[in-house]
Length: 463
Ligand SMILES: O=P(O)(O)OC[C@H]1O[C@H](O[C@H]2O[C@H](CO)[C@@H](O)[C@H](O)[C@H]2O)[C@H](O)[C@@H](O)[C@@H]1O
Ligand SMILES: O=c1ccn([C@@H]2O[C@H](COP(=O)(O)OP(=O)(O)O)[C@@H](O)[C@H]2O)c(=O)[nH]1
Image (tube, rainbow, N blue to C red; front, side):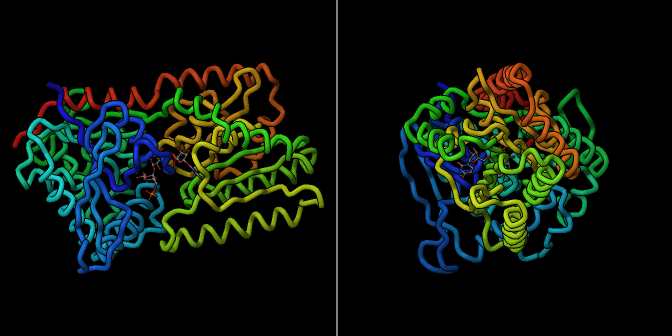
């Protein structure tokens, strides 16, 4: 009998429905293949202390059972908006300047992880295999172990692992890193992340390296390796053939017959480098005037984590910048920037990507970035668009045939966009072939398979 897969993540999606955000998209794809239990927050916040706080809901969805938990408003504020998104997210994306350390946030984070462990433990079977996702739930395995759970537990971090001295700025960094050793396997997005993890545990915790990817510290042993996440290429290409996707592409082509479209699709997050991207686009129009009245940037900036101050700030900055570029260069019949502050249905995205001559995927730091992979999968192989990709996205480790840029270097990024717009067909085809082969090779099925095989094979932590 094969073990049941239990996936735990803060954000869960219905595997039969489209979801925004790379994690929910990838896990939906992975779970719909194997079936199992998906446990996480319901998305519902109830008044603190009111009835319903901590309530568990079970709901079948195809081969998967969704188990979701309502959170009280105080718990949610401290755990999600507070510790997860005002401390861990900025620090792990190297933005110490945006972190707000607050003891209350940390207490809420621990409280919710304990609650998740308590509720989840009632649903577990002895031979389950448990896969925990992301920074919201780092201490979950330690909490489960404290309740006596002996199942195999793996952890995958979807965001970057920062260098040791950046990590060390978090007041509770040692507790966080110690709790990672309660897992049997730690998966990271890139080799750079693994190197940062290795340096941290060796420098700060005196870890002993046992073989290539085994570490012993805090009286425990753990395996840590890179498992770059991918997409379901066939599913995404099938999405490109749906009427909505074709209609999106045709509408854009008929509205912009003489224009060269540049496409950006991101959550409106400061890690995505959106102000720098708009400045590079401004520089393109200033330094290469042949693009005026022609190059048009369609930037979808999906609302996210509203209520966290740094997200409000980035929204204002972006609105100001797009207004400024449109005011300076716009004509009666041409607006250089089309800025859309809304979530786009995933089934429309392939059509949008395919209408683009260039995709701008230029985060300042990103765990992976699935938009880069989706853009490549959606292209017409006979006349493909060009990917301009930040060297600081995890995806850059595999996507060497993209035009790699340093997004902080506005002039060089503008130059790369100019090169992309002028690239001859033969070079576009050659680069696209190499990129698509890589996106196929490192797809979401391989990610899931290799992680779960490694988890099955991991040497058990003593205890
Ligand atoms: O759940 P939210 O707070 O609305 O945020 C959405 C997700 O953002 C992050 O995604 C990361 O995972 C992607 C897939 O591995 C990866 O490509 C990307 O680079 C990461 O930023 C976050 O890590 C998820 O937990 C959120 O659900
Ligand atoms: O309006 C939008 C914006 C994004 N996405 C999806 O959200 C995911 C974003 O994942 P990525 O890894 O690029 O970044 P994240 O948002 O997870 O940091 C991708 O699958 C996009 O197709 C979407 O469906 N609608």
